[in-house]
Image (cartoon, rainbow over all chains, first blue to last red; front, side):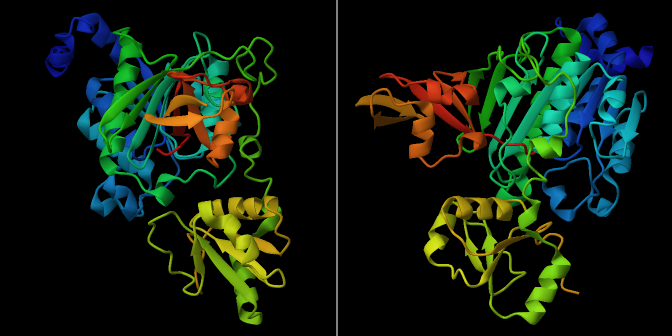
Length: 364
Length: 67
């Protein structure tokens, strides 16, 4: 016990925490969904704070481009499984705590079994499917969803507690179409913002556990690091919310790929192998690379035309409807969205999106 | 015309303009953003039924999932 008081002396000194609060932290269990940019500082601060059981779930490996912000990992960890390295780092920081690892994708099938073991879930995922899944499973299990997300220089944080207030669906009922919102890997992110926002998430988790202060329930904190300013918005519970509203229809988990329309658009996709064959056989193919403004152009198809999504409809009068047009982007989502936009604008030519994006495409 | 603040900047818009129409005029896809009117998040299903008044402050944030 001596070590407990010494280690956590500076938490115990805080009247909002004290010995009883620190003991509550010790007996709590928190699941961190995703150990990337947000999950790294989040898991480290929870471990340092003495959260008795920390669960971490992620199925990714460390990419060299992760090291700019994902502070759980070192240079020598590239290509290794994130979850194993993360556990090692967390245990090194605080050997007293228990770390449960889940080297798998969070799905409708495993989510409730995993969530059952935790008091609080902190959502540090990197995609909309997982975020709606985490929200719905938290609401159905009656636990808090401490949510945050980042993009470029911005961060957003809130706590979704369907029992007390708004859930994620009250905040935003419909997922954006695949590709219409760029990810950090596409639009970029300043590494330090994930440190700021992940630390705010950790702070909110500790506040819920100890009952200290005013948690971010029903409030959205918006952090703009570029101009260094914060704003706060109220989020009201939606009486008609499909999940937590009075007449809610979704009292069970659903297919989140379908909800986020991930599968719906597959008819326009072309696999890398088929594209290779097309490129070998045909010369009358036009390739368009969908890029962000100022993004360094993907040079995988050197003869392709770079176009931003904002300018995509201007292609309508420039493309030859007798040629097949292949749209490519890094992950294969924005290219699907580009096709949808052109279709909606009335373009009739044949269009394909490279499945999996240039990320998965290799010239063999 | 009425004057509103859009992301902190003064802007003149037509009277009785809905938030949805404001987004459409700016070529913003509603699913991709979070819209707040006078610091309250407006539910996506109510964007077409929420009309602007003189002096209103509108913030349009990106809806993001990055982690």
